[in-house]
Length: 595
Image (cartoon, rainbow, N blue to C red; front, side, top):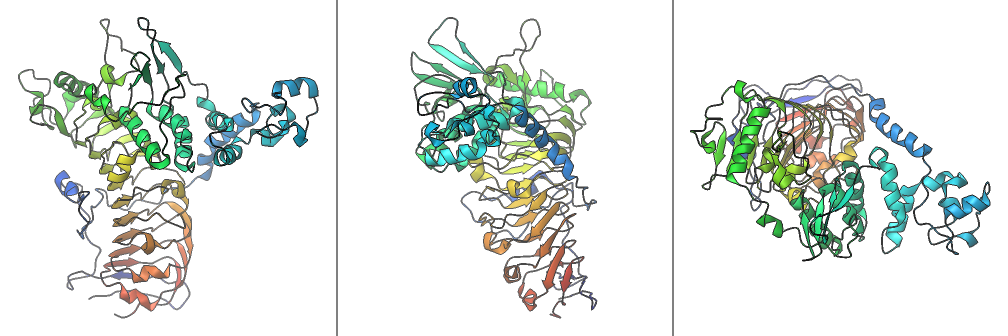
């Protein structure tokens, strides 16, 4: 074993250890997987659900080059929230349906008590006194719906009106989004929503759904805003889920399993529980060969197909679409794999293109099932590799969640922007969004129960994501094996208590703006092989947790470039399989053992 290290007698110590695994040659870090590595090599490392992860190898991110640490600008992350706060402070938002013990509402108090306001409990209703509910009283707590919503939700059997009001104040710009209820012209017993999907309210209500401690009603709202429009046929008392039946299915199962709660409609005034979204939709939400060919053609047209590096067979009517370059199909002719990696695709990410009418105008119907072509219509797709191209713009994720067979999703090394979502499909195992221009990442969510259990590999490195690390790591999928988020602008502290991730082998968040105390990784990450938290613009403080030195699996430990303090213990010699140790540029004392 060759050991190389250097130190000085001052409290600031530079330490590096490189230990070749074969006992010969010069000490060096293990080589990274080259960018040209084949897709099959990356896929082989994904472990089946029923097998333990025994491979010592780690999937290498295609880009292993070191880039300068990002510039962290805390003002950039607060502008959006400041805008919301300004709008919220200027609004007069009375508690909906508030009444005192005599049935008198805010309007009565404003008319007869102006400019005063009763503060005694004798005027209080079930929701408290007027001073806490009527905005004309000028009491700042009147608009503090968040704490009131949480308190009432936990204490009462159902959601308080405070929660609906909080959803509006938290989503000021989207509070008045256009939701319509329409009735079929021919069949009066059918009505449906139009425009129900709303990302801001989806995030708000899904958080309530996951943390409401037994109150499943929040999931009713979450399902509607996250999953979109639906139709109710009173004649047969059946619901049809027009946009994303799989999304509704996830909420349906989550609410049932977690709270013994059955989803109920909120937007439609129907006194019925939702019928199960998890079965009937499959009879009409199926792939069709003609639709799939049309979808591929529109992907070709939308990404400058005539100038692709290789477009053999595409748009040739004498060649079956299953034989076009980069396309694989099953025995029935349905597309299962798309591999157009490094093929000069240019343009918007091709989630879907709307169908057109006889005049050539897009059909603006809200039903994704029949009016959109593109990736979202390839319902048997398993693998999608569009890496190393010139795709731009944002990705609309909601339609993709109907791709129930999709397990592999790679859009790395493009120019995509906006928000990324790792739980992109119900069966996703491999999600690579690295080396783009994404500015935010949707948090992991438990209500997407399928993808929450299947995700194994997630790489979001080399973007410009500016987010609180604690929020990001909340509810991390329990079976994840590799999580890579280096070279971004994540800030804040790592959670003091990390989720138990027994299969996690690689955890990288180098070159961000993290700070605070290091948590005890070994307690939560029992099989961790590679930990890289180096080069933080803020810097970790305090000692290195002692249990780190007792790890039986660590091969790479890189904590360089922070403000860690304390003494290097003799226990470092117990790291039997360690290959790389870098503690340089910290405030550590002591020296490494000679052996």
